[in-house]
Image 1 (tube, rainbow, N blue to C red):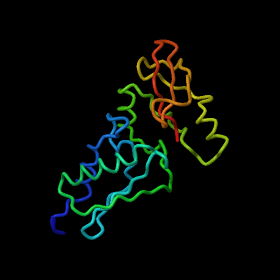
Image 2: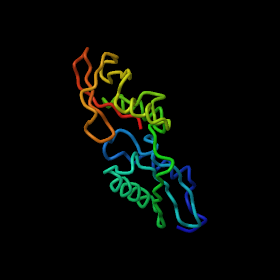
Image 3: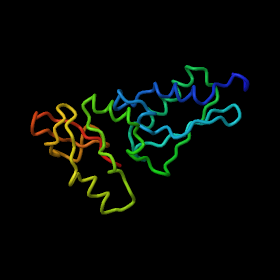
Image 4: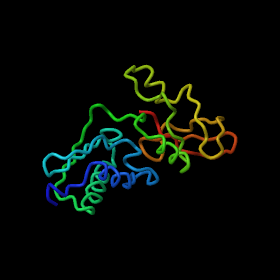
Length: 173
């Protein structure tokens, strides 16, 4: 690919919007908000990725999926840049991504509950106290936390007391 035929970054964002998260395949990496930047540095494409947390076990698979998708579109020179600061927050999940989570049966994070730098507030939110979580199956707010740990490290297990269905809640980070 010559410098005159490099695809514009809008096209690259479109390609990346088709790459699913390996743990939650109904949501794309762009909907999840972990792709932070796409830029050309000369003839090298630099994609900046912020994992949902520094120890995310899916990071290697995510990087491989990004690389595979872009190489399939003819990108020859590629750099994946890991950026840990600022830390990823659930505030970066797009509205479309939140709806995809809900439709898939995962309660999206409650708006306004992501990390704010205040330790006591963050601990309270992470532990789920005083949160009203809507059941993604029936819409009821009569729900209760079963376990702080869900099917993946970024989710907690909850249960609806109306429809009695268990579900994951995407923890606020």
